[in-house]
Image 1 (spheres, rainbow, N blue to C red):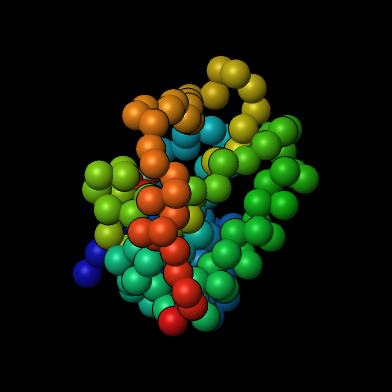
Image 2: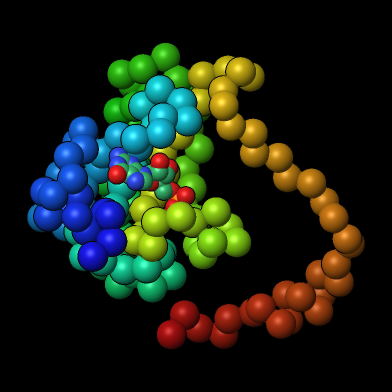
Length: 135
Ligand code: 5GP
Ligand code: ZN
């Protein structure tokens, strides 16, 4: 059983900020910034790309509402919403979760920076990645 399934089963205590029959939101044990929250489905799935659509949409619906509440109830001026998929992208817990990381100022203990690396052939890439239909 993964650590988040143990949390859902009540075997590991957490500080909850929202719960319903499908989704749980709770404070991350390692607060990157004050109010750092995780939103997870109660049904185990490895990451966002393997989560069933209806459940994923519920997770995002809760993430939106909890995110709004964080901005309303704290001094945060912004929020990073992110979900890591696989270890290479920083995933350490193999259970789909959305991070809500409130942003206060330039001293926040998080730095997300997009740097351009090699120029790409965008035409070829778009042709490679183009989806004719969703399913
Ligand atoms: P990841 O690196 O997989 O995107 O994020 C996993 C997150 O889960 C980390 O930020 C980590 O601090 C948090 N986490 C791991 N174990 C526990 C736990 O037992 N309780 C809580 N509240 N958070 C946890
Ligand atoms: Zn799990």
